[in-house]
Image 1 (cartoon, chains in turn blue, green):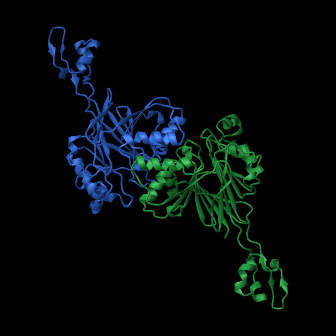
Image 2 (image 1 turned 60 degrees about the horizontal axis):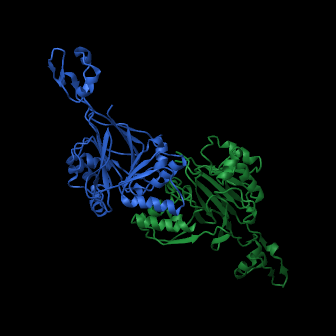
Image 3 (image 1 turned 120 degrees about the horizontal axis):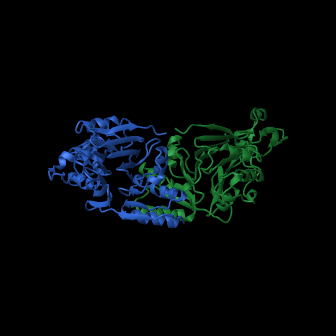
Length: 319
Length: 319
């Protein structure tokens, strides 16, 4: 079944607090798994959320600010100690590869499994991963250092046979794949049966866009449109709009504007500055512009089943 | 008052678990503060234990295995974001300095306060810090990479005037410092009053030794003797003595042997392998050889007041 599940590992901005961890999310889409950003303590948060390390095959790092990657080398080190053999794909700024290598060489350490490094393009939208079920693009954001957002899309699945039709028309199994792909069927009397009589449309493919850190990108809708879930940073409220602009971050209102522009179905806000003890102000500010929005929090699980009007959101207390 | 307080930030060995953090301790001795080792998540653990970042002036890193220093650069980065200006002293292997510099340069980051780096000597005992109240030595341990232990010692304080003696003998205040330092006093008739009639001895100075990671060091008593508190790694039980030897770690029994050899007053065991779900086995093994011992745990506070027979140990649940 078409299914998207996002687990929030960290939702804080640059400075972590006692229970607010820096950026990290674990995304499952069509049974593929992606670790998105990897702030300090990500391996501990993965354990707290019972996410098996064996499921980590792709790690995406948006940019080289520490709160987005300080947990990467510790995680790789633990995977090595746990005797991982299978390769891992790391997507990030080119300097991240040098950083890992320099770190290993200066600390006289090694990683015993292959790392395939995919450098990000900060000039244009780029296909960074594709297989039979999903594709992933990076696209440039607008921050104080080169930074990319990520777009995860399920591929369309085949149409579904309607109940009873195989028996009704005596369709041989060998013909089913082409019918699922839209072909018509000629019955034993040569009568052409329209594909719509035989199949139902597949569930619409799910999609997720991740945008942090960035000030509002005016042409964001050129990179994606109509995603089921948009995560957009909301470091500040409008009260600190100038500070947001100086530091190339967004306010909650600006994040909501981006959700509107891209016609996203649901907006998740995160990467909150530690200056706001009452995060509900950020939600109110965004909701006035874009109603379907939520604040993320460590331990939150956001699930979308294809065809659902709204995501299911549950919160497991951080243990 | 003479006082030693140790807060356990992390007690795990190489692999952290959901509530077992890698090595880090916060020591207060005679009002001086030392952060000893700095595994991943140390800044989060400092916040959880309500330890103000302003108190961190000395960070000691025993060796370059990640579970002892992965939290250092993230912590320095946060101190920078919090606008720290005052210098910090970092004691560690020479390569740690290169590692910090290479990291900053590759991630295009900077630290806005001075770092004084004190390289450790892995050949001999070395005085690495001294002021009017305490002195700190490093000494070589025996691990798979160069590694140092640390010895923290209060300096003797002056003797204390006995109650009523100043009035009884009409001693002018100007003479008190020399009497506190052991001088006798000639009264108005020229009669010499012995110092022991006038003063009481000061509380014995407190001391703490930190030994991790290491296999047993046969001549450890050459580096220190009779400390109030010895922290010694006990990664394994005797059942895995061979594994301990291969990886140059210690068993709980060997740690107890080191406490005996150095005539330490109390032994703290830590750096446990994640293979032991029941840590009480490690304690039993050590206690059979050296009675005064405890297992450390995240959130544990160990306090010694000079003259106490036993340390006071309390455990604040990790929040």
